Image (tube, rainbow, N blue to C red):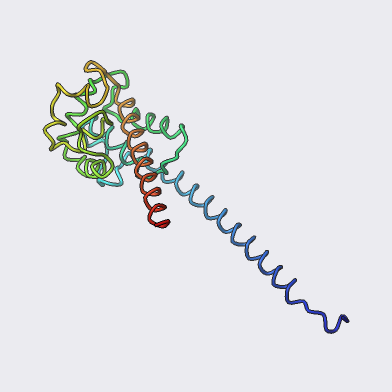
Length: 206
Protein backbone atom coordinates (compact mmCIF):
# COMPACT_ATOMS: atom_id res chain seq x y z
CA UNK A 1 0.00 0.00 0.00
CA UNK A 2 1.41 3.37 -1.01
CA UNK A 3 1.15 6.67 0.79
CA UNK A 4 -1.20 7.89 -1.90
CA UNK A 5 -3.86 5.24 -1.29
CA UNK A 6 -3.38 4.70 2.46
CA UNK A 7 -6.67 4.32 4.40
CA UNK A 8 -6.57 6.91 7.16
CA UNK A 9 -10.24 6.70 8.09
CA UNK A 10 -9.73 4.52 11.18
CA UNK A 11 -6.91 6.61 12.73
CA UNK A 12 -8.88 9.78 12.05
CA UNK A 13 -12.01 8.23 13.58
CA UNK A 14 -10.06 7.16 16.68
CA UNK A 15 -8.51 10.60 16.99
CA UNK A 16 -11.92 12.27 16.67
CA UNK A 17 -13.38 9.95 19.30
CA UNK A 18 -10.51 10.65 21.67
CA UNK A 19 -10.82 14.39 21.20
CA UNK A 20 -14.59 14.26 21.71
CA UNK A 21 -14.22 12.28 24.95
CA UNK A 22 -11.54 14.65 26.22
CA UNK A 23 -13.68 17.70 25.44
CA UNK A 24 -16.72 16.10 27.09
CA UNK A 25 -14.72 15.31 30.25
CA UNK A 26 -13.28 18.81 30.32
CA UNK A 27 -16.71 20.39 29.96
CA UNK A 28 -18.09 18.16 32.73
CA UNK A 29 -15.23 19.17 35.04
CA UNK A 30 -15.72 22.86 34.26
CA UNK A 31 -19.48 22.57 34.81
CA UNK A 32 -18.94 20.83 38.16
CA UNK A 33 -16.44 23.47 39.27
CA UNK A 34 -18.75 26.27 38.16
CA UNK A 35 -21.70 24.72 39.98
CA UNK A 36 -19.63 24.34 43.13
CA UNK A 37 -18.46 27.95 42.96
CA UNK A 38 -22.00 29.22 42.37
CA UNK A 39 -23.25 27.20 45.33
CA UNK A 40 -20.54 28.58 47.63
CA UNK A 41 -21.31 32.14 46.55
CA UNK A 42 -25.04 31.55 47.09
CA UNK A 43 -24.41 30.14 50.57
CA UNK A 44 -22.24 33.08 51.59
CA UNK A 45 -24.96 35.44 50.37
CA UNK A 46 -27.55 33.41 52.29
CA UNK A 47 -25.53 33.65 55.49
CA UNK A 48 -24.90 37.37 55.14
CA UNK A 49 -28.45 38.32 54.12
CA UNK A 50 -30.20 36.07 56.67
CA UNK A 51 -33.04 35.74 54.19
CA UNK A 52 -35.07 32.58 53.61
CA UNK A 53 -35.12 31.60 49.91
CA UNK A 54 -38.10 29.30 50.42
CA UNK A 55 -40.34 31.55 52.51
CA UNK A 56 -39.08 34.85 51.08
CA UNK A 57 -38.81 36.37 54.53
CA UNK A 58 -36.00 37.61 56.74
CA UNK A 59 -35.06 35.23 59.53
CA UNK A 60 -34.85 38.31 61.74
CA UNK A 61 -38.63 38.69 61.46
CA UNK A 62 -39.30 35.19 62.82
CA UNK A 63 -39.18 33.86 66.38
CA UNK A 64 -35.65 32.51 66.97
CA UNK A 65 -36.85 28.91 67.34
CA UNK A 66 -38.70 29.07 64.02
CA UNK A 67 -35.82 30.83 62.30
CA UNK A 68 -33.32 28.15 63.39
CA UNK A 69 -35.57 25.34 62.17
CA UNK A 70 -36.27 27.08 58.87
CA UNK A 71 -32.55 27.69 58.36
CA UNK A 72 -31.93 23.95 58.64
CA UNK A 73 -34.57 23.26 55.99
CA UNK A 74 -33.36 26.02 53.68
CA UNK A 75 -29.76 24.82 53.84
CA UNK A 76 -30.92 21.26 53.17
CA UNK A 77 -32.60 22.56 50.02
CA UNK A 78 -29.42 24.25 48.82
CA UNK A 79 -26.73 21.60 49.25
CA UNK A 80 -26.23 18.01 48.03
CA UNK A 81 -27.16 15.17 50.35
CA UNK A 82 -23.50 14.12 50.54
CA UNK A 83 -22.24 17.39 51.99
CA UNK A 84 -19.05 17.71 54.06
CA UNK A 85 -19.17 18.09 57.83
CA UNK A 86 -18.14 21.74 57.44
CA UNK A 87 -21.64 22.49 56.13
CA UNK A 88 -23.08 21.68 59.56
CA UNK A 89 -20.59 24.06 61.19
CA UNK A 90 -21.57 26.69 58.63
CA UNK A 91 -25.22 26.27 59.64
CA UNK A 92 -24.41 26.60 63.33
CA UNK A 93 -22.50 29.83 62.72
CA UNK A 94 -25.39 31.22 60.66
CA UNK A 95 -27.92 30.47 63.40
CA UNK A 96 -25.71 32.06 66.03
CA UNK A 97 -25.40 35.20 63.91
CA UNK A 98 -29.11 35.98 64.35
CA UNK A 99 -29.51 39.09 66.53
CA UNK A 100 -32.12 37.60 68.87
CA UNK A 101 -30.44 34.24 69.40
CA UNK A 102 -28.89 33.65 72.80
CA UNK A 103 -26.10 31.27 71.86
CA UNK A 104 -25.98 29.76 75.37
CA UNK A 105 -29.70 29.33 75.98
CA UNK A 106 -31.01 25.78 75.76
CA UNK A 107 -34.50 24.48 74.98
CA UNK A 108 -36.20 21.17 75.68
CA UNK A 109 -36.24 19.15 72.46
CA UNK A 110 -39.89 18.20 72.89
CA UNK A 111 -40.75 21.91 73.27
CA UNK A 112 -38.87 22.69 70.05
CA UNK A 113 -40.78 19.94 68.26
CA UNK A 114 -44.10 21.29 69.51
CA UNK A 115 -43.24 24.82 68.40
CA UNK A 116 -42.20 23.55 64.96
CA UNK A 117 -45.48 21.68 64.62
CA UNK A 118 -47.53 24.86 64.82
CA UNK A 119 -45.29 27.57 63.33
CA UNK A 120 -46.86 28.83 60.10
CA UNK A 121 -43.53 29.73 58.48
CA UNK A 122 -42.54 26.05 58.58
CA UNK A 123 -45.49 24.73 56.56
CA UNK A 124 -43.31 24.12 53.48
CA UNK A 125 -40.68 22.35 55.58
CA UNK A 126 -43.35 20.14 57.15
CA UNK A 127 -44.68 19.26 53.71
CA UNK A 128 -41.23 18.26 52.49
CA UNK A 129 -40.63 16.25 55.64
CA UNK A 130 -43.90 14.40 55.19
CA UNK A 131 -42.67 13.14 51.81
CA UNK A 132 -39.48 11.79 53.39
CA UNK A 133 -40.86 10.21 56.56
CA UNK A 134 -43.70 7.94 57.60
CA UNK A 135 -46.36 8.78 60.17
CA UNK A 136 -44.75 8.01 63.55
CA UNK A 137 -45.62 4.58 64.85
CA UNK A 138 -42.27 3.25 65.99
CA UNK A 139 -38.76 4.58 66.49
CA UNK A 140 -37.93 7.21 63.89
CA UNK A 141 -36.47 10.69 63.31
CA UNK A 142 -37.63 13.72 65.27
CA UNK A 143 -38.58 15.47 62.04
CA UNK A 144 -41.30 12.86 61.47
CA UNK A 145 -43.19 14.27 64.47
CA UNK A 146 -42.91 17.76 63.00
CA UNK A 147 -43.84 16.72 59.47
CA UNK A 148 -46.86 14.66 60.51
CA UNK A 149 -48.13 17.15 63.05
CA UNK A 150 -51.78 16.25 62.35
CA UNK A 151 -51.24 12.73 63.61
CA UNK A 152 -52.37 12.26 67.23
CA UNK A 153 -49.27 10.14 67.82
CA UNK A 154 -47.02 13.07 66.89
CA UNK A 155 -48.69 15.24 69.52
CA UNK A 156 -48.53 12.63 72.29
CA UNK A 157 -45.82 13.87 74.63
CA UNK A 158 -45.95 10.68 76.65
CA UNK A 159 -44.81 8.78 73.53
CA UNK A 160 -42.01 11.20 72.65
CA UNK A 161 -39.13 9.09 73.99
CA UNK A 162 -40.53 5.85 72.52
CA UNK A 163 -40.90 7.42 69.08
CA UNK A 164 -37.59 9.29 68.93
CA UNK A 165 -35.25 7.71 71.46
CA UNK A 166 -34.62 11.20 72.84
CA UNK A 167 -34.86 11.55 76.64
CA UNK A 168 -37.70 13.80 77.79
CA UNK A 169 -35.28 16.16 79.51
CA UNK A 170 -32.89 16.56 76.56
CA UNK A 171 -32.02 20.18 75.87
CA UNK A 172 -30.23 21.87 72.96
CA UNK A 173 -29.13 25.34 71.95
CA UNK A 174 -30.80 26.65 68.80
CA UNK A 175 -27.61 26.08 66.81
CA UNK A 176 -27.50 22.47 67.98
CA UNK A 177 -31.19 22.06 67.17
CA UNK A 178 -30.77 23.42 63.64
CA UNK A 179 -27.86 21.04 63.04
CA UNK A 180 -29.93 18.12 64.34
CA UNK A 181 -32.83 18.93 61.99
CA UNK A 182 -30.45 19.42 59.06
CA UNK A 183 -28.73 16.07 59.64
CA UNK A 184 -32.06 14.26 59.86
CA UNK A 185 -33.28 15.88 56.64
CA UNK A 186 -30.06 14.88 54.88
CA UNK A 187 -30.19 11.33 56.22
CA UNK A 188 -33.84 10.75 55.32
CA UNK A 189 -33.27 12.22 51.85
CA UNK A 190 -30.32 9.89 51.30
CA UNK A 191 -32.38 6.91 52.45
CA UNK A 192 -35.27 7.85 50.16
CA UNK A 193 -32.92 8.28 47.19
CA UNK A 194 -31.29 4.91 47.87
CA UNK A 195 -34.67 3.15 48.02
CA UNK A 196 -35.77 4.82 44.78
CA UNK A 197 -32.54 3.74 43.07
CA UNK A 198 -32.93 0.12 44.18
CA UNK A 199 -36.56 0.11 43.05
CA UNK A 200 -35.60 1.51 39.66
CA UNK A 201 -32.92 -1.19 39.21
CA UNK A 202 -35.40 -3.94 40.09
CA UNK A 203 -37.88 -2.61 37.54
CA UNK A 204 -35.22 -2.41 34.84
CA UNK A 205 -34.15 -6.00 35.50
CA UNK A 206 -37.78 -7.15 35.44
